[in-house]
Length: 312
Image: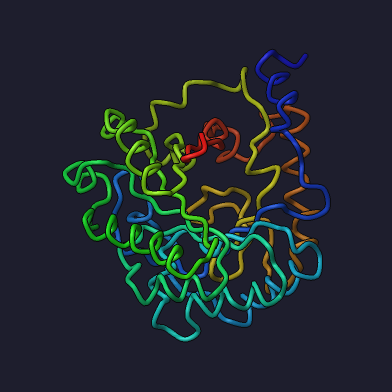
């Protein structure tokens, strides 16, 4: 029998499955990163780092454009895409390609250390729909502890410049989100963070810490399988590495569990193959039959966020 937590999630529509094709696609345009953040396992990544070939990237975008132009496409899976701001093809050319194909929800996640004036201009010109900037702190010393290798003052300056440039160019894109992952190290700064960035015109995203499928400690993940509901990421999201491997989990940094290869199959085929089998186990709550990394994972609790803006 479904428990109360499960019924609540069902009522709130959080168990909805993307039928036939994913609603969200994460593309590993680059798997290198320029920071060593305390709450991220990228610095211990075991798979070979790389950059997605243009031919593979366009294959993915072309299929999405043909099937469903409203799919949310993240231009990053595990990496910092602005490292590609000078390399050909640039990240801006990748974004432009997706937008020219008619995609309506192309977004980027960045730590903004490389978001200089030229990059800000190029992001606006590319047609990017939204950018999520990970800051996670209100004080420079806290930022230094969490976003290791980054520069707090530069990130704030870069983010504010992008917001101002949008106003100067009378552009409503990209929407600027600033992200704050709740942790013991920064929780006391949450209210100040929200207040400051709302005042600047950014949308504030507050989200729980994840354990990256058990790779790091996340004390906020307190529920066990008795209170478990189907993972929102599993229900909605396909994550693709720079080599074209479609993994079974949006937090599977090392691509330990692969559902298929985009070089050999379409997104639709993979979504309706092994990934569908995985979704069936989630929906039926047959969690004991899930693959090891999924069966013991608690990150399904973290697939949520709270948002704040000047209008809220």
